[in-house]
Length: 203
Image 1 (tube, rainbow, N blue to C red):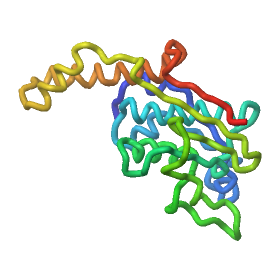
Image 2 (image 1 turned 30 degrees about the vertical axis):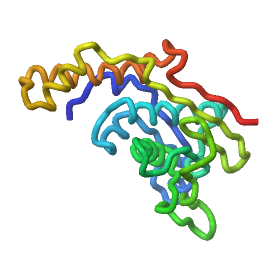
Image 3 (image 1 turned 90 degrees about the horizontal axis):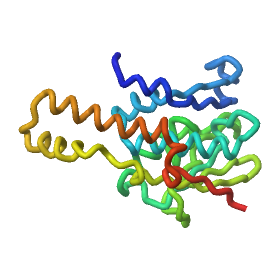
């Protein structure tokens, strides 16, 4: 399987999953997510998928500065409805990493390890997503704005040619390269953009 090499340069997200430990799925319950994992699940890499990964990584660092995040103990809220815009794409990525779901998740074992009812839509928030630890109730709002990372000037004209069915194979390949170049900047150069990703603790 061949993919852009920068995927391997994106920082991993490592969590502790007590359910996985109990059931012997992963040694010591430690789970490592790489960007390539969410790309395979989503079926593509784009600013939305990258943003969901980046938002989750940023929120978990803020909520668990000195320990591994606990998968299954993270509550996530969105201001949008599930059907709105790209909310579904974002929520699917976050679900994959945190385990949080709205209704479809694991119901638990003897009242423990439940994953359902940990994701909420149509919430009264202004951020891109709100993350809360269920054990301490510590909460952070995360804001993601990829508009500060401009696409290459050739990207839109190439997309138009592709949509019109007039693009050559070389032009299609070039479009994909430019598309992924923007994703790479979002994930690997995030510190260079002040407004790309912001996190705010809720007191």
